[in-house]
Structures are given as structure tokens and as C-alpha cells.
Amino acid sequence: MAAKAFITGLTGPRLTRDERLFLGDERPWGLILFSRNCREPHEIEDLVAGFRDAVAAAGAPVLIDQEGGRVQRLNPPHWQAYPPARVFGRLASHETEEGVRAAYLSARLIAADLRRLGITVDCLPVLDVAHAAMTDAIGDRAYSDDPGLVAHLGKAAADGLLAGGVLPVMKHLPGHGRATADSHRSLPMIEAPADELESSDFRPFAELSGLPIGMTAHVVLRAYDPAQPATTSEIIVGRVIRGLIGFDGLLLSDDIGMQALSGDFTRRASAAYDAGMDIVLHCSGVMAEMRAVAAAAPDLSGRSEARASAALARLETPGAFDPEAGREELMRLCRRADWPAEAELEQG
Image 1 (cartoon, rainbow, N blue to C red):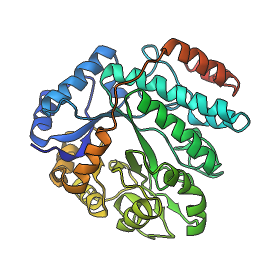
Image 2 (cartoon, one colour):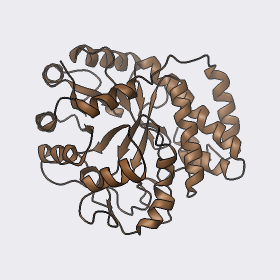
Image 3 (tube, one colour):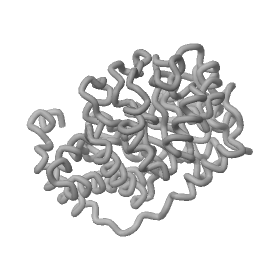
């Protein structure tokens, strides 16, 4: 049977009976993991295997947000702490190739961590261009305020993941960097004119439009659609993401549980599909919400199915790589950008 066009979260480190039944009945295309799911390596391996068994798909995608810095679901002591994107931007601002190399190595090491657990998709790189008043929800997750440098470093991170057998997801299309509100809590409104957005914020996404997967932002771009956020805007998806940016890969929504969106979960999911989302992402693991999203989710078919298949076809067996040497080189490079700082060391 065909998978349905949504990705789900789960409540904890082990599948419950109700979750197993839900997965078997509703057949989500993928699973996304959060810190609540990630305690011990063997538990994650079992959870991943249990998910794939429940949906009867050995290659079903398992996603995670493993960026480094504040957004890292796998943490010490079992996994390494990785730098936030801004560290690579800081290094690249005066030593471009060293910054690019560090971004690649960090992603390659992350990929090695993920592959061992059976995780095949990482929601990285963040291609949002930094702006002075941007929300802390992005903050040091953005590489730089230079769109060209963002694209350069984002490509290095994507290349590192792909070399390690993990699919990258570029986010947050078509750009979250000008938002001054956190879309987890409210709907950000971006007032910038179209020419500024096209010459700056859209540029990294356009330069990396050949990546297999992208994720939308829950932000309103008034220059294009004064009412609907990108995730539920047919104008933004069609004219901007598919048109101006030229992305024809698999398009995921950001988590539709965020407060930026309104309506019940069936309406939110339906609005995203109507706008042109290929896959809707729902993260909370709350069963009533999961059922509401599943009720709106169509079977994956047509162009969406073709995009999903094309993305998964880019998964490759990792080449030779020495993680220990990679870690040593990464730390040597990052020390030149003053990472980790004393405060970061104290936090673990």
C-alpha cells in the first residue's frame, strides 16, 4: 500500500501499542525524532526499526533536527556536541575555505552518527540569511548575513550529509531571517519589498535549488501574499518557491503544530496540501492531533510521489571516512573561530 503524505512524531523512546496500531493503519511516509525519543543508542535503533516494521517499509525515512548548537536532538554523553552554524560563518568571514571545510566536516560527522542509528534524513542546512532584528528562534542557527556565504556554507553542509549517506533538508523556504517573531508562538510578518527578498533572502535557496528536500517557513511575506504564511500560501509555493527560487524537489511543511498556524489540525494540514505541500510534518506525538493530520493526508501519488522517490534515490552508501581524524580537524578549525566558548564548555 502507498504511504500517506505526512511525517509523524512519537511520544517517547519506545513505541506504544496505540502508536504501533496508528502507524500500521495510517502509513505515514516518515518519522521525525526529538530529544524525548533519544536517550540511549540501542533504544533509538529499536524505535527506528519498530517504526519501519509497523509501516511495512524497510526504507521509510526517519528524520531528525541535528544542526549543532541549540538545535541538537542527540547530545552528550552518547554523541558529540557540534557547533552552531554561526561558528562556520564567523570562521569563513576571514578564512573562507577553512569555514567551508569545517561546515562540511561537522555535517559529515553528524551523518556518521545518524547512519549508525538508522536515521536517514537531517533537517539541515539552515539557509536563512541573518538580519539584525531577527528572532532568537533563528539566531546563531544562521550562517551569516551574506547570502553568498550562506549558500557556500549550506552547500558544504549538504555535501557532508550526502557523503555520509544522509539526505539534507534545506530550510526555511523562502527565508525566515527577517522574521522578528518566533513562529512557534505567533505568526511572523515580513514587510520587506520583493526586490530585497529576491536579491538576498531567496538567493541561497535558489543557488541550492537542486537539493532533494526543502522545508517551508510559517512566515507571511506581504510583498507576495499579505495574508497566508508560506506553508499555506499557493502564491508563495507556486510563484516563489517553485517559480522564482526554482525548487522542484520534495517540499515539506515545517511543523504544523506551531502557533503561527490557525485552525484545527485537519484544517491546517488541508490548507498546506491545497497550497502545494508534498508532505505535511506533524511533530508533537499527541495521538488526537496525529489522527486529525492523518485524516487530511492523501496517499502519496503523482508528482509528490515522484519527488519523494527522487529524493530517496539520492541516498548513497557512505564512503571511507575516519571520524576520529575528522573530529580533531573540526575542533582545530573551530578553535580559530573561538568555539567552544567557556560558557559553552560549562553547558556541556
